[in-house]
Length: 202
Image (tube, rainbow, N blue to C red; front, side, top):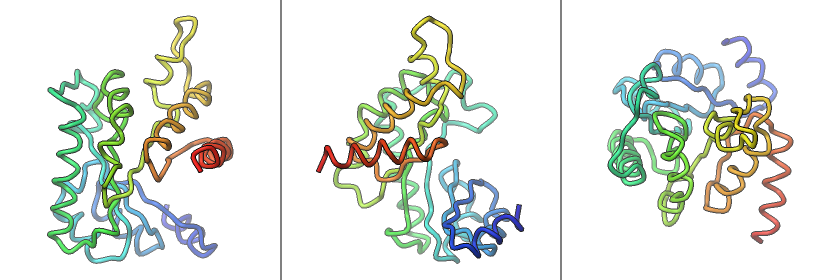
């Protein structure tokens, strides 16, 4: 992995590393990564130290449980309030550790320990995360399985390769509700949708 990162960094390509392991983050940052995306919301104190010791941006994401257990019947009393509260808590921990506020992003973690209804509710309520927030909100809905379920017109769940239209619809809603960073697989199509949405919104 590191030779690939180092090669891309030499081409001045901004690089993000997705990891919950401090040592992987440390090595990736040394190789030229400029963003650390931690699905555990900086749960590991050592990860906080690694990020605090660099000048990288950090995406703090919400996930219920672990990647292995997150979809085992996830339950919330109020998914929006609980996810928002978690993200505010973790950003406070990060700032207390010396990470500047302008280096932090937040991600409600669509699809990470959420049912279809939870994901839809978070998207409906996204302005509760974006309005007045000092933290840019990242949304990653690209090709997520919940889209394959709700966009299945004939009852058959869409494969990940057939979820482009559903993805663009969800990404546009997120953008209109204030998301500033869109994580996408289909970059060209997503960029076109973002440009059109931006023009319409002025």
